[in-house]
Each structure stands twice: as C-alpha cells, then as structure tokens.
Image (tube, rainbow, N blue to C red; front, top):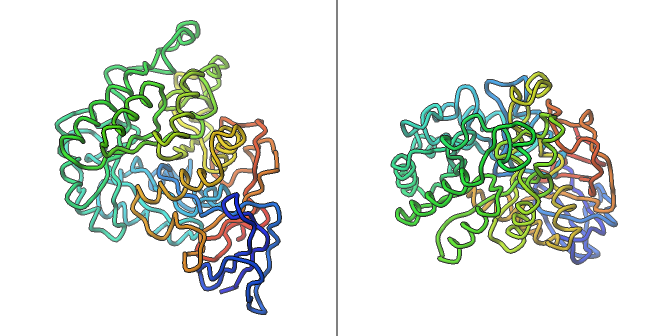
Length: 430
C-alpha cells in the first residue's frame, strides 16, 4: 500500500500541519515528519482536512432500480462529495427487510470500494406499516444493522411504532422516522400556504410532520429507546425537538442540505426537480433549521440523496417522483449556508457531517479525529473555489439536482478511504 504525506493542510480549519498516511492509518500529524522514501507527497496548501464525511441517509436504489442508481455509482458520487461512509435506505426492490437483502447491499458496497455502505433495515415488512420486519435477524446479520427506517413512508400506527422502539432497545438499535402523517398529506404536492393556493397544487401542512415528531418523542420517552427524526424541515419541528432535548430525552434529528438553502418559491417554476419529500418550506423555516443546526438542536446534516431516471422527473409536476440528488453538493451547500454565513465553523462541519452521524449509526471506523492511530478516512477540500453545478459532470447515474447552474463554494480535492485515494485532484482515482 502506498504511503502518502499530505503537506500544509489546515486540520479541521485550524492549525496547519502535515499528515502521514501509511498502511491504512494516520501514522503521524505534525511538522518535519519522518517519511518513507517512497511516500507520495500531496501539496495541500490552502486546503482543509476533514474526517471522512458520513451520510446517515442515502438512497442507492440497488437492488431493483439500477436505472436510477447502483451501489457502485452511488458510492462514486459519495466519494466525490467527500463521504467515506453512507447508510443505504431500505426502500429498494425487494425491500431491505430481511437479513439476506441487507447483506447483499453491504457486500455490494465492499466490492465497490469507494465508500463503506451500511444498510438501514426496514421497520415493517415491505414497508407496509402493518407487521414488524426481521429486526433481530438484520441486527445479527453480517451487515450488523443498527438503524431501521421505513423512509419514504411513515410508521403511522402508534402501537406498531411503540413495539419497534421496544424491540430495538434490546440491542441498542435506533428507529429513524419519516415524519409524515399520511391522512394529512393525501395527494400533497408542495408546502401548504398561500403559494400552493396560487399554484393550484395540493398543500402539505407543516403539522403533518410536527404531529408525528411530537407523538414519537412521547412514545420514545415512555419506552426509553433511541429515536432519530429524518429530514426535519419546519420551524415547528425544530421547536418540538429543542423542547425534548431540554428535557433530556433521547432523540436525534437531521436536516438535508436542500432544506438549509432552498424555499417553496422554487415550486412556482413547476420544475419537478424541486419536488421533494418533505417539501421545500418557507424562508422562516429555512432560517429556523439553520439556527437549529447551529445550536445543536439538529444533530446532523444528511443528504437524503434520492436519484431518479430522467423519465421520472421530466414530466408534469403532479406525475413526477419526489426527490433530489445530494451527495456531491452537500459539503458545498453547508459551506455556503452555514460556514460562509458564520453560523458554523469547520470544526462544526466535522461534528455535523462526520463525528455525530457515525455515532448515531454506531460505526467506529469513521467519524474519528484526524490523529495518529485513526483509520485514514479523510477528505481535503478547497474552500476558495467557486463553481457552477453541472449535472452532466455528476458521478451519479441520475441528474436530478436542484442546484443545477447554481454557483456554490468549495471543492473536494481528495478523498481517502482507509489510506487509499478514491478521489485525487478532484477526480475519481480509479
């Protein structure tokens, strides 16, 4: 294995130091490091070194929708975005509700070699919301599943949600809830408000999200398990989670990059690339989730990378699929919305996009400080670069990015997975 000496990078936006990588580990951090004669030197002057990013919410589509994404193409996109680990959601075909399917996804990730893939198991059989899936079998499988979600569908039955929380408590698992009361969102197309009325699109009320979050927090307080809220998007949701954390309840939450930046106004274009679940909300909601992320109410940023083939998006709004890609633009959006606005530091970025998601997902080889003895999972980013997003340059199979043509800051220059470069000079290394 090639040794690498990364010179002159700013470690998590702080001190400037060199990093020596050998045999899959960070061997030393400092200056004037003793270096193997055959080490490859990477000049990282002006670059920021971060621990490899971890995405707790990715849709890789395989098995079943390989026309939209595969584990290989999805993890290539992840590497280009600086991610070294991704958690693959269960809404595949067949659904990842058995040990066999989650092991298949896990092995595909190992074979691809661009990012470690940790499958998320479905909470209910077929994600139908009527019967618990094989949670214990998935937990005991080679994939060692610890996070379960019916994402794309809400576990709306309170009794079933309670049983799921009770079941995973036995092995320290987490239920990640897609907070959407289905009876309040039938036929919903965008955020409910004055604009939805003007556009003639069925509204998606904030309370449909907030009611489920409040209910599940109460259920989890009763059970004493672990609850994670997926893609939180409203001001009211932030306030509910903030109140729960003040009470010391065990609940974590995520926000997507697009909910940190984009608003419902984009729906006025009727361009289905802006159709997403949960929908883009108001400016006040965007400000609230930014504040919630900055003050720790929201624990992490997760991409909800949701690739779709052209035919699923190049149609009228009402027929289009929900979802946006996000792996390759996530770090740039966070820099733009949170770092460049002084709401967060680069140390906070490491916390929200690496340390904390790794802790919630219970993985130990990622989300580690850049120090001697840690696995060499890291990313080098140039924060000074500004570039317009070009979908055709994406490593993903799909092109449904909402940031098409938008100029965003920051560029991933290199990504290392256990000491092996997956990205070098801003391009896939192999």
